[in-house]
Amino acid sequence: MTSRPDRHTAGVPLGAVSNRRRGIAMVLVLTALVLCTMVFVTLFHLALAQARATRIDAWRVQASWLAESAGERAAARLTADPDYAGETWQLAGESRGSEAAEVRIEIEPLPDAPALRQVRVRADYPLDPEHRARWEKAFTVRLETPIEGDLP
Image (cartoon, rainbow, N blue to C red; front, side):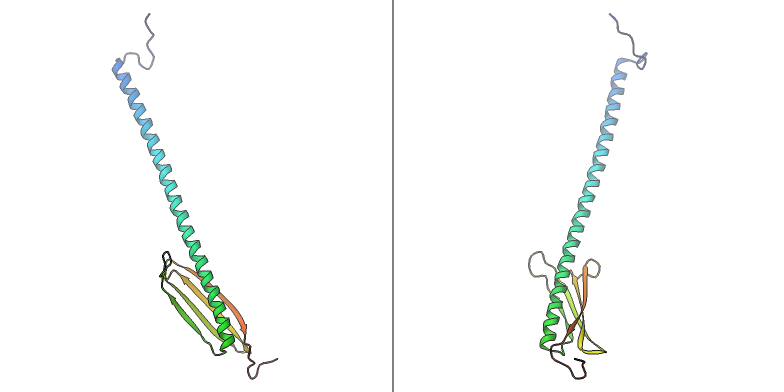
């Protein structure tokens, strides 16, 4: 029994049909490899972006805690010494995983209330001009010792 020739292969030698099928399979395999590579590269970029976002969030948390500590220090120092004018801390990244930081405390008297001080704190972590988290906080502290000219 003879088989009927396929309309796509009619008049084409048998080896040429086999080569054409292998060529089509090769194109399909290469297309699948390109698509898999594109998916892998996209997932890799997403993982890098997520890692960077996590690192920045950790910086923000560290900067917020440094600013909170600076605020508590400023309030305690003002309670002990009404003439305390502020300070700047330079923290070296000594422990594993920590980086250098800077915390600045600025204190200004309020002109219409001598017993009040405006406190501003700013924490930068890590100490890098381009890649850092900055946390700022401002609040008012009432001095414990009455100052001459202050209203009761």
